Image 1 (cartoon, one colour):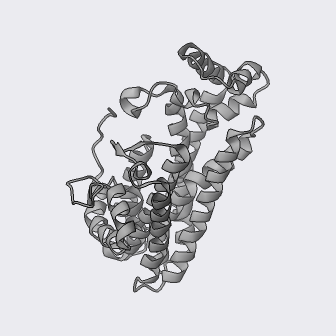
Image 2 (cartoon, rainbow, N blue to C red):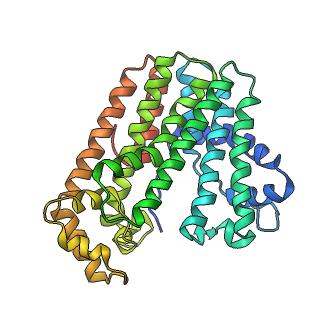
Length: 338
């Protein structure tokens, strides 16, 4: 079981604003897709019966609402952006579960295991198109710009996922390639979340760009920290076995850094072996990643992105309360002080 953390007040407010509209958007899908979407979000069982489920922390929608507030708009003005970004996020999760073969999400069977792969794929597609519809239907001057920004971020996210899949069959992944993959796969959607509400209300382009830059750095800081936890994390916090990423031979950021170090032959040999690694070999691989500089580099990069995110936000002329909420949510996402 993962450790419980107190949700920032901005997140609880974000959930209250966005979840009703998100439920409506999923409910507007055709019945065959709506039942999958409602199940995936935790609102219904496999037969479509309402349950008292939890639809997640809604981090990205909260950031979208904060970005509308940063532009001087009311929180409600950012709700369509919040719904759209969450729909795209869940489109990606539905498809990721299929690609990764994951059978459980949030303590429940994944959608594809209950409804089948074809219906789960279609449900993901339905959520993606609903995201664009949500923005274009908003009565806002920046609706078209916001839609274009969301679709561009989605393309980057897909490119990052494609790169990550490509890395599985390669032994020559460079550090720069891995950084680009992380920026696309994780950074792009968080950058969009932090700026989409401002985009929707047609905010100044400099503000939109700085908010997006803040979000991209938060996303990269999160990815570095998540990759560190995937090797050296406490199972009580992560909910995963120690060294889980090494067991699966994931080419995470610390691993790729160590694989590109001068003395990486032993680690490379472990990663090339077709048979599963024993617990002793996983422990040895973690030691080799640390000796190869992967752990120290990832820690330093996480700190660098935290500092860069803070600098980007400081450059924004926004209300202090909004700035404080942005930093509080970013600290919650990364587990680092901003």
